[in-house]
Length: 221
Image 1 (cartoon, rainbow, N blue to C red):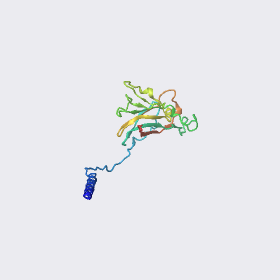
Image 2 (image 1 turned 90 degrees about the vertical axis):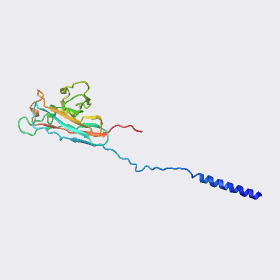
Image 3 (image 1 turned 90 degrees about the horizontal axis):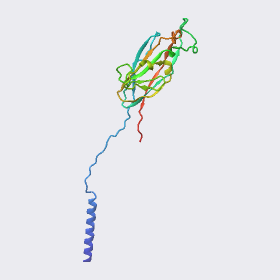
Image 4 (image 1 turned 180 degrees about the vertical axis):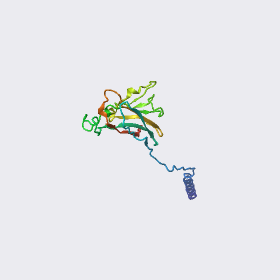
């Protein structure tokens, strides 16, 4: 009798163990997989249209306007810096009595010291004239935005071409998004006055302007 009770107890314990073991696998489940996770870098791509300007055979009293267009054709927002190169003044190689002199050194021309320029970013890219909100690249390298409701007098912002030498404008445009485009306006003139004389005959002045689109400031984790 005692043995039967022991055997029965063992059987019951064994069955409970089997049922408990089976219960650990008896639940619902559903699995979803996140596939093809990809990280792709965006692009900063600045284009410059309109060929560099070449102005020949100019004289005191002449003036004009040249336009170049910049556009962000990339996929990211960037900030635009603008840098002027050193200014190169070249003495005329002509042979008349006024076309060759040694003022300022052999081969150094005087045109950049008298010819004047106003450079600004035409924010609305339509008027071609200096209006509210336009960004003036001032010859001291600081830059300024035309305030409202001021009507700017363009003459007050003209400066000699030489005065733009190596100017750098950091964040001339703080946020330039994809597809954004702006006209850069170069207004030039050779003034009439006592400071403009025969020494500039045949001289030339040249410079480069670099437009740099770089990653805008971002918050770091």
